[in-house]
Image (cartoon, rainbow, N blue to C red; front, side, top):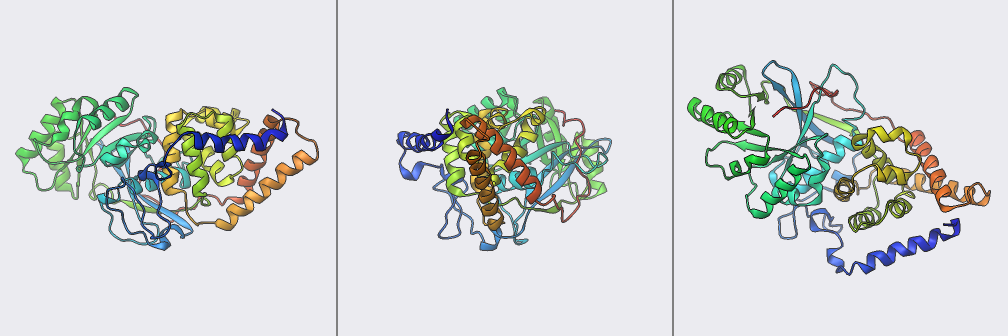
Amino acid sequence: MAVGDDKSLLFGFERAIHSMKLPATSLLPSVMTRSLDSGRTPVSGADSPTPTISPREHLTPHVRYASQPIIDRTGRVVATELLFRWNGSDDPVGPELGAYATAAVLSNALLDGELLTRSPAAEHPIGDVLVNMDARTLMSPIAESMTPDVGVIELLETVEVDEALTQRIRDLHGRGYRFALDDVVRLDDERWSLAPWVQFAKIDVPGLTTDQLQSLIRKAHQLGMAVIAEKIDDEQVHERALSAGADYFQGFGIACPSTLAVTALPGCEASVVGQLYLLARAGVAAPSLAMVAGRHPAIVARLLRLQEIHAPQEVAVSDSLVEVLESMPRAVLVAWLAVLNIAAVHGRDRELAVLLRGQLAHGRLRLRQEGLVRTSGELERASFVICKQLLRMRLQPRAVGTVPSRGFARPEPLAA
C-alpha cells in the first residue's frame, strides 16, 4: 500500500465502526464507559450504582495502589495481593467500586508502576499477583487481562453463582486462568460449587472457632484447593492457622499493605481508546489497529509495557507496532483496552501528551517530505522508531512514593 493511502485506510476504519450496526449507546459496554458530565463513572453495568469520583482523582501527578504479601509455611513470599487505592485521597474503598477498582489497580500497578517488569531487587519477591473481581467484571473482557503468567483472580464474597458465571469460570480455567475464593467463612458458601475450576480458598480466620477453621480447611483440601489464611493480624492467629493446616498466610501480622504512588503515564483520549477497543473486539487486523494507535504515544507507551508483561520474548525483535500488537493474544489485548477505557482516560500530563503527538506527527511529515519512506509499511515502522525515541526522552523514570515491605522480583508461582 502506498503512503498516500493512509487517509483512505483511516476512513475505512470509520466505515468499519458504522458497519457494526450498534446503537450509539452500546458502542462501549457500560462496564468500561466514563461519565464526563457528572464525575460519576459506571463501573459494573448500566443498572448498578456508580461511585462518586472526586475531580482530583484523575489529575494527581501520580497514581496509587497497595500491595500485601502472602507467605508460605516457611515464611517465603509466594504471592502479592494488589489493592485499590484512591489517587487523590485516603477515602474508604468498598466492593461497590467493581470494575473501576479492578481496572485502576491493574493499570496503576502493572502499566504505570511496571510492577512486574521493572524489578528493583531480587531480594524483594512478588510472586503471583492476586486481584479482586466481582461477578460483572469477571463476565466482562477485563477478566482476561489476568493471564495465568500474571496471577490469580480473586472471586469476591459478593459473587452469586449461576450458570453463566460457572460457564465463564470453566472456559477461563480451560485456558489456564487461575482462581481463588475470597473471604470464605461458611461451609455452605455457594462458591464451593466452583471448586473444580478454583485453585485456592482464602479463609478469614478471625471470628472462627478452632473447629470451624479446621472444618473449612479440611473441606478446601478435600476439594483440591490450597488454603490462604487471611487476616492474620498477630502471632497467635498465625499459630492457629498453621496448626489448623493452612498452606499460605496473609495479614497485618505478616506485613501491612504498602501504598505506592508512581508517576502516571500521560492520559489517553477516550475516543481513540474506545475506537481501538471496538476495532480489536471486532477482529480488525493488527495493521489497521496500528494505524490508529500509532499516532498516539500515550497509547503506544502502554502497548509496549503490555508486551513486556505478556510477550517479553518478543520485545527485542519487534520492529513495528503491528508486531507488538500481534505478539499478544487478541483476547488479552481486548481485555487491556477495556481496562484502559476506565483507567487511562484522564487529564494527567495533557500538555505532554499533546507535545508527543505533535512531535510524532512532525516526524512522520518529514519522513514523507524527504522521501525517506516509500510505502505505508515503511512509514509505520519508521514512525514506531520515532515514537519509542520520544517516549524514552520524555517519560520520567518510574518514581515510587512508598517502598513496599516486601518487594518486586518473581519467585516460584503460588502452588495449588
